[in-house]
Image (cartoon, rainbow, N blue to C red):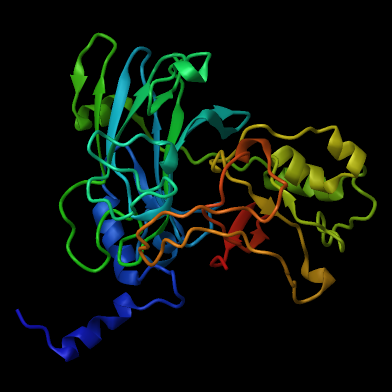
Length: 381
């Protein structure tokens, strides 16, 4: 059927972006239609889905993940001891991807550091290529991979771990499994699996199957029925009462006052080392804070191998905050470059969970504190 220039002009708003690199509204809607379905994973979750869809689901609220360009798929599950789950997927057309597991510890889901696989860590299926390895062909047509989630104790030596294996242990406790995809290529939906402005191929981004300890095979529907649990919305680690208690505490750093705490006129950017050290510790003096120790595992669903930096500031110190810095170097993937390039960080200050990783993605996200412990976010810079 011929399409007139008039008809194409009417479609233009759905394909328009405010800035280069953003996801068009049409692609946001298509992503929601394609991936927001009943299954193991809840999603797509992210700023665009929550703020631009007419009626988003609760699980699409990014809350503490305010960047505009990630797409998150999130599962909560219990895998019975001795059982396994197999995820067969397609590498997305994107800058970065990762599958990571989290276990409930001290009021939050904390990363199981060894149980995460970035795109570059995953061995592709025979005959397929991995587009995330530096130097790889990002346009490779066959781009399949297989990951096994095992309800066993992980081998003590990393050398004894099978390729593409993730271990949940035998405790049969609830875990969360997050699939994050950052900055899909131009012309793709937010997940990087399908075109942004044309019908989907019909090939799913992933499929699931399982096996019980007695050898019984499970279909994807049976995996969801047996393993899936409702996605839990945990209370904030620092609630309103705790926050006001921190603001009014008598052992705070004497340079603070209640109007702007925990911001200081000379606040510095620092790595995020957990809620206790970074947030609660920000109210205290250097000696008291040092005694709190650094968190060795990422909390609250953060990427276990990402360095997060933050600063507390306040309008009390002026109406405009000026940030000057040197940007890291990232691989240029958005325009669908053929070869995956490397990247490097502009700082050597890297927390334990982010050592020896090339820079792949970065963003700056302003947030405003409201109701003491919830965050209202504006689009990332």
